[in-house]
Length: 268
Image (cartoon, rainbow, N blue to C red; front, side):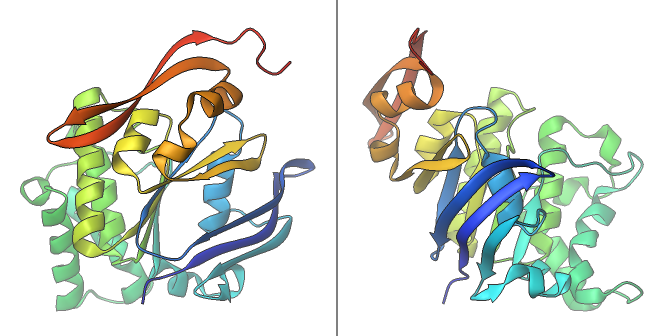
């Protein structure tokens, strides 16, 4: 049975600034869900609410049927791991030690790691290709290596749900593809539910099973890539004219979005 995350009538905001008024979404199977939308549409805010990082103004987030804000943090962390958009750690920290912090939900504040904890951390390092970099300092890693180190830390929690906020933002195209292919592989091999905020529409189309498009704090569209990434929807969401085509890639058909002009009437 897969882990379920559900939002019911969420109102979200910061202080008096209400961003979303009534959001409903259910993710109840191990799939990759990409959240897309223009800047300021509420993508990261929704992810933070689903991740227990933001307390809703109203409504409820349920994790396996329980109010996530009434659950113990350790209980949540054993089911869900989060890699925020901007994460920091001391530059002299070793990769090995960063990954080991992912075992905190199982060890406790003053506990000592057991063999199972060491095994889980090593498994996460191997799964992300970091096993040869365990004794490297974080400040000696490339951007792609650092992102994989944070992903390994999240995997060490042995979660059922993985939350990623714009994970490819600071990576070049090679490392973007490397990271996205790794996420897809981990989803397949570990039966992970992955929820990630993405700006790259072609990454969303290629690597996700489901796309949730947001506009003005509300869910504008929710479904398969071909149903969400249409020229009409992209015009409404981003104010751009785009050509959406299917190409053959490696024997499979792949949807590709090609934005090529700005709509003068956007927002009118």
